[in-house]
Image 1 (tube, rainbow, N blue to C red):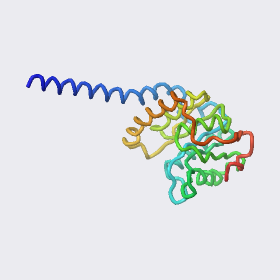
Image 2 (cartoon, rainbow, N blue to C red):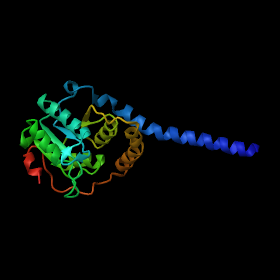
Image 3 (tube, one colour):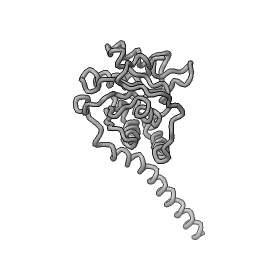
Image 4 (cartoon, one colour):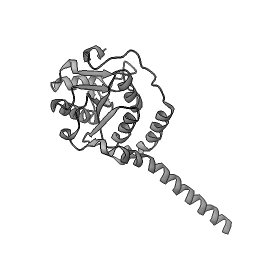
Length: 217
């Protein structure tokens, strides 16, 4: 009986240690990038482009969480903190398109068409940052997404050598589930960065100095 209790005790300690390790990773990432998160649009340093990370769309329109990201990008552009907006997301099938609805949303807000660039192959956060650097030749950017997502996105961008800053998009999607989901996503981010994973699609370069309409196919 004593040996059985000892076995369960060791198991409990091991489980707690594992849970602590799992929690440390996203927390460490958050602390690492905290100096690069601006508390407002006015406080963010000027960069080349605002990067709007993809999220779900509803019947051809941005979901509330995606519209909130687009709203911050619009504010950055109109405050002259960026000169371009890069919308990245999943458009891997004709039946699913995360980027075109945001393009229409930005046009409706008065953003000039030539300053809106679309990345149709931003299938995950790592791919979006990698392609921003290697396809769109971005050197400095301001990432726009919600609080639960921003630390991981910002950490990936800076580890890839980008001069990256972040602005938190206000949102209603701050459920505990979103933060829990960041735990495995953070481990995946570390794996992608350490292994130098190349995104599925790269293709020719599309410099931001060009006309964004050329990316609207």
